[in-house]
Length: 145
Ligand code: DQA
Image (cartoon, rainbow, N blue to C red):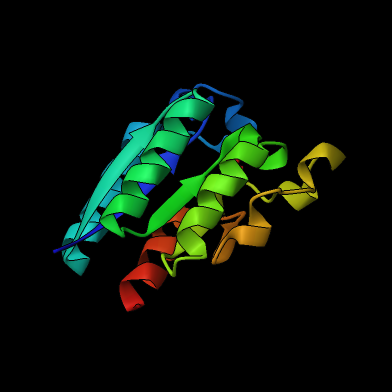
């Protein structure tokens, strides 16, 4: 069974309680459950992880690189300024390991500081604006390849 990392960045542990009018009412546990169910039906193992730490996200990307495992990444606010995270993502994608950037919301339809992603330029693809379906679409895309 192939393995995919699903990595979530800062403040996503508060989904459900955090700005529900923006991010919806689903908790991260509920999103993880939906992903795990879909992964099981696709015959994929998912490791769903969340941290508020840039350092920890980079460590997990290094683990994915070592395991040659594709990644679904919601970098949250790090999307907009973390060059260290961008470099860690590039380690994977320049080696042919897929990394899909996902967002619950469409950052381009929000505040101007969210319009730029330093991650997108090194991601395999981006899915944004579909809530939990952003993650499920990314999973299905990875399953196809
Ligand atoms: C987000 C969008 C980011 O701008 C924001 O900082 C987040 C969540 C999203 O999933 O829509 O924390 O990545």
